[in-house]
Amino acid sequence: MDRPLPEGVRRRVVGLASDALGGLPPAELPQGLRQYVKFTPARRAKYAATALAAALESEPAFRVRIAERLRLGQPDLVKALESGAVPGAADPMDVAAAAYLVRSAGWSRLVTEAGEEAERAGAEDAAAEAARLVEKLQAELAEVRAAARADLERQRAEFEGVRREAESLRKKVRSLESDTRRAQAETRRVTGELEAAKAQAASERSAAEGEARRLRHRVSELETAAEQGRRSAREGRSVEDMRLRLLLDTVLQSAQGLQRELALPVSQIRPADLVEAVVPGAASPHDVARRGLADDDPALLDQLLAIPQVHLVVDGYNVTKTGYPTLPLEQQRIRLLGGLAMLAQRTQAEVTCVFDGQDLDVPVIMAPPRGVRVRFSRTGETADELIRRLVRAEPQGRPVVVVSTDREVAEGVRKAGARPVASVLLLNRLARP
Image 1: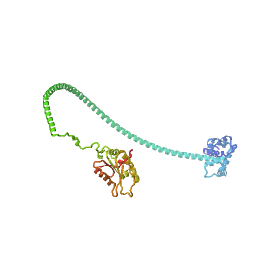
Image 2 (image 1 turned 180 degrees about the vertical axis):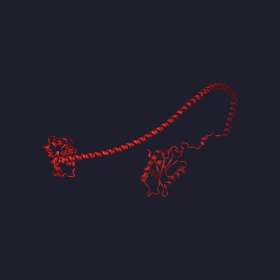
Image 3 (image 1 turned 135 degrees about the vertical axis):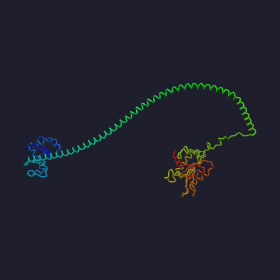
Image 4 (image 1 turned 30 degrees about the horizontal axis):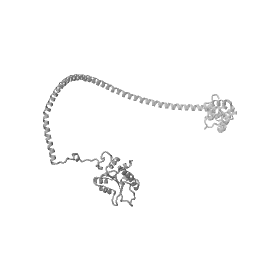
């Protein structure tokens, strides 16, 4: 060849030699290539490219071995080259590389044409890439110009805003300077007035001190005159006091004589005894915690049960269905009566628990807990009616507390003199240890 092997053909030839190198016996390899036998084809093509190209050019036997490997791998291409017919669909680089290795007729022309074709393709690619780069740069230049124009407009707008703001600030400064001058003039005027006021105040103070000295002297004279007048009054009053005392003694002796003559008893009643109020130890449930405690505060029930001889009447099912409605009726009764028994033991109060019995199919057999009276209403009678009869059965004045959330029951027992409380109050008290 009259020119160096084209770079594209060279890379293709080196690649073919690198792939075929691993299949040759080491003895048939040139001495400079034996160290690359154990490399992978990709590493051989990278690190042994120069050695492979030199061996192919200077070692005909090695090139023939590589050509034989190519004939086994691409027999159609090699046969076409040896027959002088170049496949039209084949890659020019592959054709040039195969022609270089096989050295068929006209191989140098094929290699040169492939190189020229590669150079033309490279030049076309470079031209296209340059055109794309020029278009890209032109677009970027247009964007930069547009951004520069926008930035310039923005800066102009900002400058105009800054200019207007500076003008406004200058006006404000001039106004503040004018205000400052007026304030300074006002300060001088006020200072002068203050000095004049101080001088006038000093003059008035000296005059006031003189007047005060005169008044003190006058007061001392008046005190002396008053003392002389009091002394004269005491001397005159002593005679009047003596006469008044004699008259008072005469009236008292006359009253005592009249009391003995009429045999009037000594009075034990005082006006304060006639004023209606709550006497200690005689308070009713209506006098307890009207304002001090909430309606659901357990301390309210403690205060009510602390009243002597108090009777606690409980609407049983009203309490249980408020506190634990999901339990069966029997379990509701057992749980409530257990809590009432402990409450009765702690407070020593009389406790009666009333259950509605008009819907019972069979009599309830149970042992009432100690300290708790258990009653069921009769057939045709509700528990509310039985509670009202229990309240009416109590003597007038006995403290009775009824636990029920039923408004009708509460109103009825309140009219009868009992104190109604909500069921939640008893539940909160039983829940407390």
